[in-house]
Length: 426
Figure 1: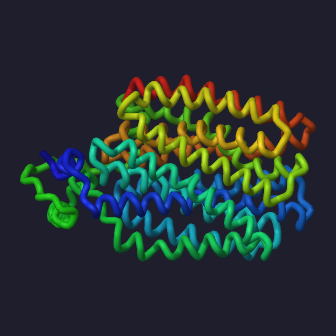
Figure 2 (figure 1 turned 30 degrees about the horizontal axis):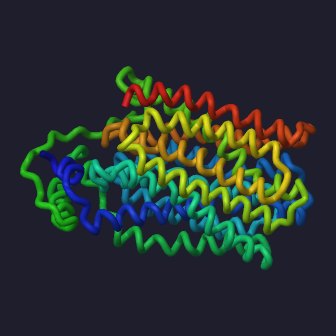
C-alpha cells in the first residue's frame, strides 16, 4: 500500500485536520474577497453615479480573473506542488484586495478585481486537491464540504462585517479583506504540507524521502511500497480532453457552468436587487449574509449525507431545488419572506456546488487533480462572468425582476441533467 493509500485508509491525525482547517479558512477568505464587491456595490453605484451595466462589469471583473487563474495557474499545482501555488496565490489575493481600495474609476476597479480573481482561481483549484489528499476515505466528502462551505462562511461573516465597515467608506471592506488574506501567508507556510500523493506520483529526486518525512510528521508509519512515478504531462490540460477523461471533463464543465450562472447571478445581484425593492443597504447586505447561512447548512448537510445516500442522487436533487427556490423568491415582496427564500436558495445552490467539488476530487487522478479542477472551474467560471452581466442587461432592458430571477434559475435544471452524466463516469 502506498503512502497516499495509507493516509486514505487510516485515521486522520491532528496535522491532517489542521491542513484541512487551513483550506477551510482560505476558502472563507475567497468568499469574502469575491463577495466584497457585491457588498460595496450599492455604495459605489451611488457615489460614482454608474448604471447597472457598468456595475455588472465591475462585479464580473473578479470572475474574469478567477477564470484566468484557474486555467493558467492551476497546472502549476500538479507540476510544482500544491503548497507553493497556494502561497503564491494568497499573496496575489491580498495585494489585489488592498489595491482595490485605491480605485477611483470603474477601469481601475476592474483591473484590481481581475488581479484578485487570478489569485483566487489558482488557490481554489489547489486547496480542493489538498483537502482530498489529506482526508481519509471515510471523511473525504465531508471534508470537501467543509472546505467548500468556507465560501458562504466568508460571505456570512463578511456580510455582517461589511454592514458595519461600509459606514467608514466602501474602501474599508477591501482593506479589511486584504489584511486578513495576507495574515494567512505564514499560516499556510507552517500548517499546509506538500501533498504526499503528488510526491509519489511525481517521483522527482528527493520526493520519496520528503514523502516519508511527511508521513512521520503526520503520525503515520511510511510505506515500504515503491510507487512507479507518473510525471505530469507537459500538456496536462490537453490530456483531460483525451478519450479517457473527455466525457467526465465535459459533463463537469457543463454542469458547473450552468449552476454557477444561477449562483453568481443571485448572489452577485442580491444586495442591489434588495435596495431596488426599497430596502435599506444594511438590510440588503444582511439578506445576502442570510443566504450564506443557508449555504453553510446546505453544503454541510450534503457532505454529511453523500456517503449515506450517494452524490448521484443528492446533487441533481438540490440543483432542482435551486430552480424552485429562486422562482419562489421572485414572487415575494416582504423583507422576512425574501430573507427566508434567500436562505432556502443558499441552502440548495451551495449544496450543488459542494457536490460538484466532491466529484472533481474523486473524478481525476492525483497527477491531474489540480489541473482538472482548474480546467473545469476555469471554463465553468464563464458562468460566473455571465451571471452578473446577464443581470445587468436584463434589468437595464426593463425585464421584470421576478421574470429575470425565474429564467436564470431554470439553468440549474440543465446542470442537474449534466451532472448525472458526470456521476456515471466517476
